Structure formats: C-alpha cells, structure tokens
Image (tube, rainbow, N blue to C red; front, side, top):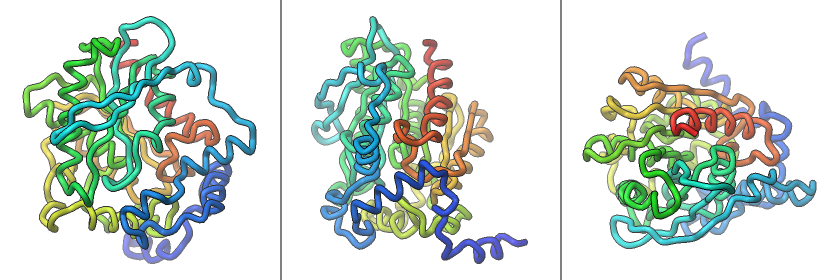
Length: 335
C-alpha cells in the first residue's frame, strides 16, 4: 500500500479510538469540561479554555489520588528572570535533601501562544523529585502579542541566566541540562544550538518531549492525527498563523529545526506519542541528530496522545516515559 493510500485510509478517523484505557479516561474528562475548539478561538479566548491539566486534576479529585511523597516534598519558589526584553516569571522546583543539585532548565508547551508555568507544573515537579535535581521552569513571551522569534530570544536569555545563577539556587553550575515539551522542546533544542554557536556552556543533556521540530504539516502523523485530541492539525495551523510574521519564517531553522546544523550538540532523549501530529517531527529530529553524530535515544508511546507526559498520576504511559527520561538525565547529570 502506498503512503497516499495509507493517508486516505486514516483521514477522517478518530485516532483516539486507539488510545490506552487510562488515556481515554483523561480525554473523556477533558471533553466533560466542554472546551471550545482552539482553532475557533481568539488567543485570549484560547488562554481561558479548560486544559488537559484540568482534566487530570478532575480525575485525581474524583479518585482520591495524590502525588507520590517525594513529589509532594518538592519545594517551589516563584522568581523573575531576565528575558530578552524585560523579566519573565519562572518557578524553581527543589527536591528534598542536601545540594548542590544538578539543574534542569525546563520550557513548557502551548504552541508559543498560550499556557504557562502553572498549566505545566506537573512535569517539572515530578522530574525534580525523580532526578533529584533543581528544575527551573521558565516562561517566555508568547504570540501573537510577541511574534517569532520572541519566545526563542527569551529562552536564550534564560539559558544565560541559569548558567550564571545555578549556584545561587543551590545547584551545581557544572551540571546543567535542558528540557521542554512541545513548543518548549523546540526551545530546548534551540538553546543547545544557541549555546554551541555563542560559545557558551553547553547543556549536558537535552530532553525533548514531543518536539515541534519541522515545518512539514503534511507528514504521516499529521494526516493520521488531523482530528486527534487534545492536539490536531487545525490547532497546529492556528498556532503557526499566530506565531509567524510571514511565511518565510517557517523556513527559519529555529522553527524548522530538522534543517539546522545539529553537529556538536549534547546527547538527546526524545519522547513521542502515537496519537500526536508531532510524532513525525520527533522521529525526524532524532534521525537528524543521529546523522549529525549526536547520541540519541527515542521512545514512542503508541497509545498516548500529545500532552500525556505530565499525567503520571493517572496515565501509565506517562510514568513509563518519565522513567525513560529520568534514567537518561541521571546518567548524563551524574546523579
């Protein structure tokens, strides 16, 4: 069967029919919150919509689920850090115990348009506990108020800040890594590229969870998951429309990372979800990194959707994916 025939066969299907049972529970809880389709929203309206984080919290409350003790013991501190054009909020997650700890700079997702350090609080808290590292979740300017490349410029500023201030946070400035989810994973790999090109300290490791990594919206995973939840092809096109200044921006390697020079980057751990338009992006990025001589591990979670990674309290695939990432982070951070 040709690729065209395969695509014809999957277009119009609901790919979430193939989701794991616990993943379906989250999707059903999400639907019960009556979210408006993002592609039908203005950016301000989109920022007010229920999120899958709300769905997870709903399930946890209904089932009496609490995070593991180590996760509950993580302490947080809200700070402001320099961006490229003013200060941005950040949250420091510090595990129990004595430092100095390794440090991980984390960027949240949201298509460069919405979400923040609150919506994406589960991942950095869990990673801090499991990796026994300080995690700094850094916010960044978002489109359409701040078009491309504002988010990237803020991410670069955050890296410079974390290198200079890791010790004051209780961290070891020689053991710093970077991590991101979705749009945040795009920022994470670009931080590694920026550090290499600017002659700055390189991250020891990059954890890239379902990264935005190419300008190809005709890939097999985009077609398979054009109707997926919580992320689908119309939403991705909506994000792009609000992000870019002109179509030529899509050819910029900051967005089309798979076309960037990836030589000399730190080891990468890539996570993809089977029910996700961005699955092909992650696969292609892993291939390109390997081709550039970078150490790469990649794992796909077939019955999971985009955004699953932070759902460890209710989704087994999230627990598995976090363990996969944490194992690599510990190996490269030396703790």
